[in-house]
Image 1: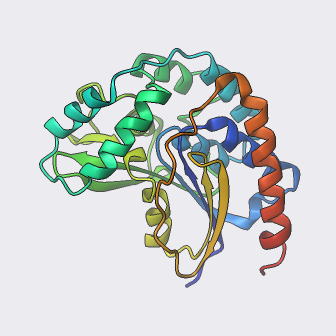
Image 2: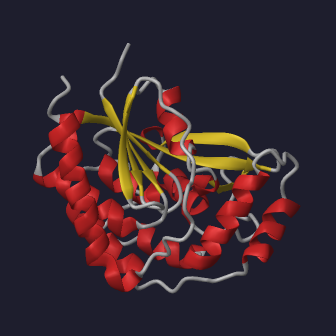
Length: 259
């Protein structure tokens, strides 16, 4: 049975994601979406979208902008991940991700826990208004691991978020005895998750390349095209406004025109 619209949050520019959620909230379009997915910091965006909670997401973005990032050389990131993988089929994607994340920086688990446990945001609380999926990869074979958060309690959700968002600091926060790594390695993963769950109308929020795409039925291969859009945290309002305008165009040209 064909389902309704779904939305995928890609990349770590949560300010661009916030602009999208702001537009959906203002245009009262939440009810057009039945599912959301995300990887990396896009996991947080997916969670807050799935809760239909724009105001809390604004507060989350403020907290995230104040967190100090850990910067590691790309060769060191790649070396660490390569050391812990047996299946090398994603090596090229891991290499590209290592380049990207060396510029963006990583968030450590203790800082991420403070965000998750902030009582005014309640990231880890299971109060979703639609299906919410996060994606990771299981080490060492790099098997795709998909978590439908609606099915889990807060403690489990917390562990999934940490593995999906925080830095891979050799891998002591397991989920059901599994060692996981962020799905942000593969920008196609949030789209694959939605396709696998029979969603055909997919809005793709690509904060790596600062753009939004709408895909219907046959979703063509989606590739990470640019790694040069380094996130400038002092220009957050610019990202929010750009995404807000991009989303309004999608709403006017697609969401309101398809039954």
